[in-house]
Image (cartoon, rainbow, N blue to C red; front, side, top):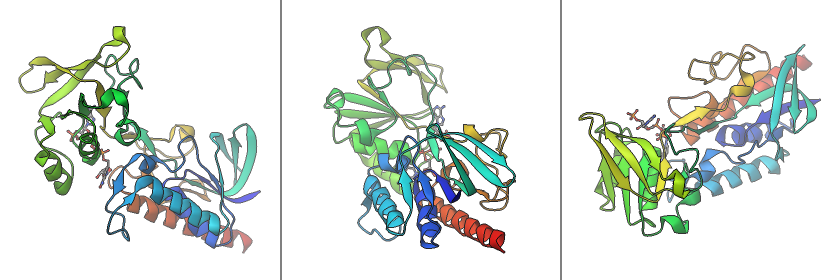
Length: 309
Ligand code: NAP
């Protein structure tokens, strides 16, 4: 029987791993399909304390994992297929194998939200992508016009990053002001290679018949006007959906799918805690996820101590 199983290796999961490992609980940490979480797809992280020059997202997560392993965390590249809570024990199926745990910390993060327009699914990886850092340097985007959809920090970050490769970056936003933080918004709008297209949504991505992205169809939400914009890439950065499907009917969820914690990181099941982007739809920062991971670890530690009496 495991003392602590942690689902997820983003900031929340790995911080929980560092704390529970230092408490000598030898946590089993399950990566899921995206080791390191969404931050590994970011370029430079400028707001994580302690890195005045910024730090590469992948490097930050690699360092966190090393720190957790140094204290005895066991990180396993594995996916959880099912979870059950029975008589004070969490029973998981992990890549077909049963795993039992006294405490569980769910830090399963969030995935990219989709546009849900014609052509999006058919042209994924053929010009449609959700990660500029992963795909921006591909030959199909070099010296070509590309489109970024969204108005938040992610969209601004993606657009800025893509100016290294693309001839022009169109930032398609459904309103006429960016949601992004002021520093990111100012930097984005000052970049001569980025052209905002305000009050507009993508209604279709073309061209499925050619099996590659050749452009987008747009609709101006204020005037109703429809137009086309040639491009070879569509980078959707319109937010996230929490990875909580496994827990539907088992733990409390909000209507938007995020966990509804009891207190900060608790759940209705004793010994089961939740942390990070699968809970927090408001702040969604690396540092807030880490903070929740820390809290969940301390709660798990206290729960185990109380079990031992
Ligand atoms: P976000 O802040 O939720 O922004 C999503 C953007 O997509 C919004 O502008 C939204 O429009 C738009 N949008 C949502 N659904 C849409 C749809 N169906 N069609 C068209 N547009 C749609 O998400 P995010 O940018 O991924 O940021 C998430 C969190 O991570 C934020 O807290 C952000 O500060 C943080 N973050 C921080 C950094 C950094 O500090 N370096 C980098 C990336 C992310 P509306 O504005 O009209 O709602």
